[in-house]
Image (spheres, one colour):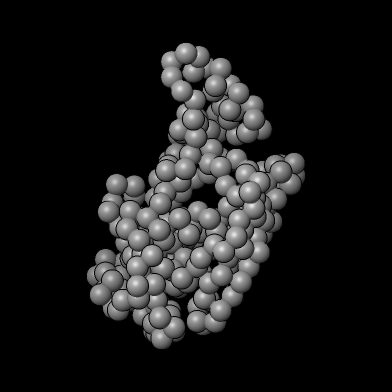
Length: 220
């Protein structure tokens, strides 16, 4: 995690080109983002960045967006899991994922201070890996400390899907993408996810793929 630097250098990019979601292969997604001081967090430029990020996330739409995903290597992410995003999931799937609506909030300089050893595996997507998804193991629960958009210290104990979102966004701030953690044989287009896999429990997906691999190579 890099030390705090002046945010102005990076934020000039916002004024020049607006917020475009960066895609895998762009260097900024592989950099460790820079921390912000409390003074920088409450500055007009960072507050403007946060508002632009919220708009970009909602327009995508997505449940989270980290600043590196819009080309800005700063330790800022926005999160919001709206109830309308749950409509395609059955009550059983929502319960299995422990997924509930999460109101909009901002995390700055976040760090995971503890994680449940119990792992959960579900298909996961990313706005910066557009058009694809894969099964990704994540901790069931995490405790995260961060600063909010007012530079106030916060601590959250998250479980289920919220914990997954936090881990995903914090990974972005460390230059890590879900493709680094995924079960590689489950990597699929969103179209094929809808056609073949979306209604199957994760163990069934893994079993089918393992069977299909046969002796062609290791299963990961």
